[in-house]
Length: 486
Image (cartoon, rainbow, N blue to C red; front, side):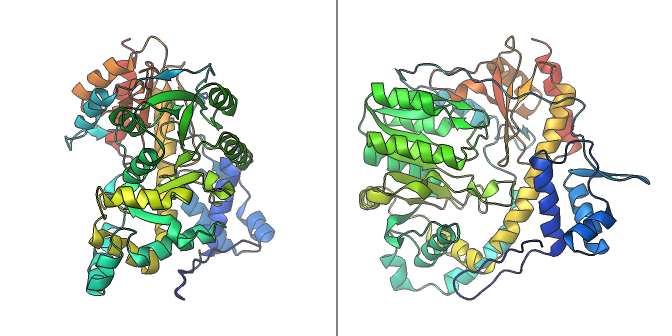
């Protein structure tokens, strides 16, 4: 029988369960994602599915209509439903070449500012954006939550909770950790001005200028900018496009070099979308524990997984408080509200004091809005819609890339998030491509901004975080034409 999900906010308020057709649709989507149902293969007939899953014909039809809307299956007249063939050819996975790593100075900010500047024009196709489209978020509902939260706010509580964060919001976040099987002491949690402040504070807490920090390669460019600002040196650890950070190279680097901290994304890594499985997360924790090196775990994309089972972070294995786990609502619910958090383990008190010396507190109204929304707004229902939209948009971008990009192109296919990493023919210079594309009203993120040594010259990251339109399709065709000029 299908499993129906309920979410209890701890105050007796229960979200409505997923409807039968939504649950069945997610089960079929999972089979497609795992390759059990291959492109072009027929999905179970309505009669067969009804009998096998114990659901009505009407429920099966509703589920198949939903899967059609998500771009996962297609109906064929008098034949049934089939897994959509996303492209006439499959884009192979990018390659990764492990190598012995040394430390490097970081200087990428000017490149990053160029990319960010390219997004200022609202007419630009935002393939270079670091955020999904605001259209995908319940901003009007959040505004109502803010109004209600402010009405019910106690002035004394505002002052009392200023450093650690809104008490209701902290309770809701702790509850979500608990529901994932990771009970969290409330005193370990600090609310921050987005994940970036959480990550900044974590890094400042465990390093001094000149220290070595192990980071991913390619890495999220903001992490490189933070290392640059704090005068830290990067030790780049290769990332496999599907399996995540190379643990053999990390083990070698930890044994040879005086690394003071690691900063990794264990799930849906930006820019590759790679995710460590539980065995590799356990092995990663064993490594940092053996060397007594803290891990700053950037988990900003945790809620954007496509599967039905939410992944757990490395934090789940942390029995000594070595993992500084950082999250945010910016990518999953409230872009612009700048509300994140850090579950800081043994470093909670030090991080609270650092925060008191800098920003003191994130926006109080924003915290109140998110706390109210988490309790009454239907967060999990919103997340299901958001994940479905992103999965559909990923398929559209992969299909367009297979049609318009050169035959040698390789691409990731992450199980969540909203980024694709493309490895183009080596003759392509993605920095030059960035400038050419900008002249055509298209933004993209060139590979060198994701490397301390400005490598990945023939690679780029594209975002599918905005609804797919004919303009998106035309932009992919234009990019293909520009790539062909190299």
